Image (cartoon, rainbow over the protein chains, first blue to last red):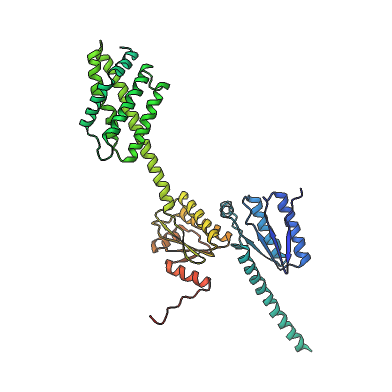
Length: 140
Length: 279
């Protein structure tokens, strides 16, 4: 099976666009590939575009949820963009509300939101970092 | 009198029968506002012709193939009449008024008139009943169509502002309708790339657990697509019902009125409305 979902690196972010029907093996491969890439590039955010995805089942729904959770543990924000109405309805009917996953209508809005999420986070780290510096100086 | 004789009788006296039948129909009352006399005569002629053909093959078995053309004609006729606003009796009278001229012919030419008349009477009754049945089927089809169009009409999704959609729900909600509402809303969200959707339930008379669940599903689906949903127009009784039923609305934003919801939506989008100082 030559099918592979390409993961693009753009600055601190990883972009991936699912444009084929997801089958189980493909989803598992994607999960593995993405985790490796996040670690390798120290990505801060992942944007998953599923606007071309028209069919989902419970497995794929759960897979999306897993991917998001794994990324969070690896300190990367995840945003899922462009979900089709039919897909959204199916996921809701399946009882998968993907709690805790950020969503956006399209890639543009998704990217803006992701940047905001990441920059908020970095700001916090930066502030914390400064405090530490001050305390270090005081110790001198 | 065998069936073929009846067919013959119909054929030889076609013109007189047609004339008398038209007179009988006129006496029963032709709906001049809906149909002109030429059409009536044309219909009558066609029916008589078909009846002649069908009767030649035997009049006992109404279900046989020979009767399908006449059934088809009656079906067409009653369907179109049900659409045009005829009453069922108008439509049935068309068949029943043939009785008088036909019976008098049979009486004149038949050896065993009583038996033949009974036979023909039964036949015409069957045709009449069939007509009424078709009429009703036509009516039911109209009702179904109207129900469907009402479903579509009753769920307009309106754009209040760039990026803000509203869907004012009016009337009771059932699963079927909620499904349509949900789909219409989600489609529109994609189409207009709206960030916020307001579901206004001012016009919904009652909210039970099912309706609440449907609303929650819609909100969740919209959230999955990246849009935020606000439910507005919750009346005091409905709020009380929701609490009584123990429905968990979760983190769904609710507002008392559409105006409040709109205000909040504008705030979300960082839009400020300013009254102009000069008039």
